[in-house]
Amino acid sequence: MGSEEYKRFEFHYGIVLLRTRRFQSLMDRLGANRISKPLGWFLLYVMPVAAALGFFLFLSQLSILLSPRGAVVASYVRTLSPLANLGLPGINPYIPIVYGWIALIVAMVIHEGAHGIVARSLGLPVKASGLLFFLFLPIGAFVDVDENALKAAKASYSARVLAGGAGINLVFGVICLIILVAIVGAFSPASSGAGIINVGTGTPAGIAGVKPGDIITQVNGVSITDLNTVLGPNTTLKAGQFVNLTVYRNGNLLQFTKVQLACCDIIENLRTGQNISYPYIGVAQVTKSDLTTTVSKYVTPLDNPWQYVCIPTLPVCQARVPFSDSIGGFYTSPLGSAGVPIANLMYWFFFLNFNLAIFNALPIYPLDGGQAFAVGVKALGRGKMSEATLMRITGIATVVVIAMLFGVIAGPYLYNIF
Image 1 (spheres, rainbow, N blue to C red):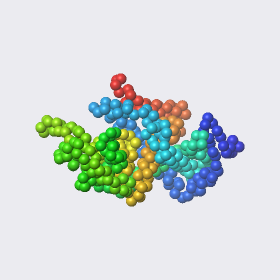
Image 2 (image 1 turned 135 degrees about the vertical axis):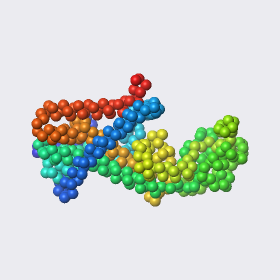
Image 3 (image 1 turned 120 degrees about the vertical axis):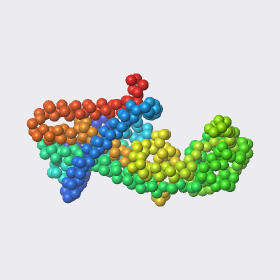
Image 4 (image 1 turned 90 degrees about the horizontal axis):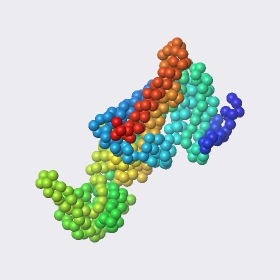
C-alpha cells in the first residue's frame, strides 16, 4: 500500500480523517473468529428485510397521503421543519443533540466495522480505516475495503461485504428496541396523583408556585389521581374559594395553601345542551390512569407497531411516549433516575440504526443496497450481461426508488397543488 493510504491525518473542507491501524488489527482478529463467516451469511439475508421494511414504510406513507385523511396528515407535516427529513442531530430540530450524536456515531461505527469484519473473514483486504471528524466533532467512522478486490471477488463474497453494514444496523436496532420495551415495561407512576404538564401564566396554580413536572397528590387533604374529580363539572367548589394543594416534587411533598380558584372553565352538557361553568387553577394534567395506560400501550408492539414511529420529541407524540420530556418525569423505574435517560438512548439507538439500515439497503446506487442490487443482477445474468446493461438496470432501480422517496418527502408540500 502506498504512503497516501497510510497518511494518518487528512483534512478536506472541514472534514478530518484520522487513520489508525488499531481498527484494522481488530477487524483482522474479529474476522478470523469462527462466527464471522456465518454472521456474514446471516446479515446477507437481513439486508433485503431492511429494504422490504423501507418499501413498506414508504408505500404506507404514500397510501396515507392518498387516503381521505391525507389532507390532515399533510397539513400536520407542513407544520414541521423540512429539516426533519435529515438524520443529523443539531440540524434536524427533533433529534436531540446529545442522544442523537451518540446514537449516530455508534450506528456509523458498527456499520463500517461490519463491512470490514466480513471482508476480513473472507480474506478481502481492507486498505484503510479510522474516524471521521467535522473539525473537532466526531461524526463517524470509515472502513475502506479494497474496491478492486471486491469487484473481482465471487458474487456471494461481495454481496456479504456490502450487506454487512445495513444488516448489522437493523439487528442492533431491533436489540435496542427490545431493551427499550423491557425498560419502559418496568416504569410506574412516581406518585399517586395528577401530573402537571403545563401551568398557565398568571393562573392560580402559577401564582402559588406550582411548576410543570409537579404531581398534585391532594386537594384540601383529599387524595386525588385526577383533578377533574374535585375541580371538574361536578365540583362543589366555587370561584373565589381557597384550596390547599399537596404537591410531590423531586421526592419531596410541598404544601401550597390558600390557592384561590379562578372563574371559569365552561363546557357544554351534551345531554341538556346547556353550558356548565366551574372553577379552575390553570394547569394541564396527566392522570395516574393515563400514565399507566401509556406504558401499557407502549410495551405491546404487536398491537400497534406504529407507536415506535412516533418520535418522542414531536409535540403530537409527547403524551404517547413514556420517556418523553413532557411525561417522563412522572415515572419511576428500577433503574432509578437513569431510567428515562437510558430509555431515550435506547430509543435513539433504535431509531437511527433502523433508518440507516433501511436507507442503505434500498437499491440506490452507489449506496450499499444499490451495489448489492447490481451484484445480484450480475449473478442472475450468469456472466452474459454487459456492463452497460447492468448499469442501465441499476440506474432504473435507483431512479424509481428516488422518485418514491421524493413522493414521501415532498408529497405533503405538493398535496394542495394536485
